[in-house]
Length: 101
Image (cartoon, rainbow, N blue to C red; front, side, top):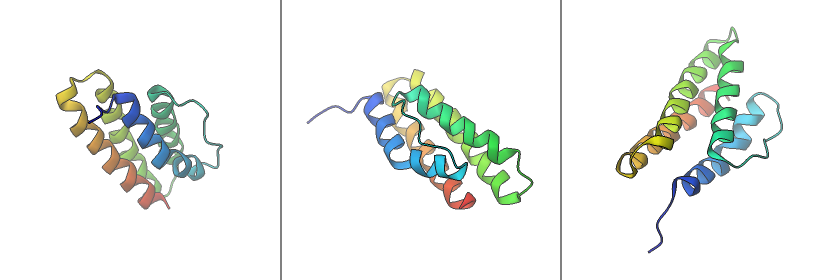
């Protein structure tokens, strides 16, 4: 059985969410596949949505803020905590996209 690394998990999250996140702000999907590049995208979308006067976009921005925090924590967490942190991030990413769409 193969061991999944943080890089693999971030790549999977990026593959699932990067296009939808970029579409929310009408930006191209960034080429960087590093975990930090994905977190930067999440934070950029958070900033754009948070500056909106639309309540749903502000709600989505809050979810993205939480997601960015969980993703950042996952980079430095012990392996035993990583899975939970990334699952929380995934939930907030999914909720943010659904709320903003």
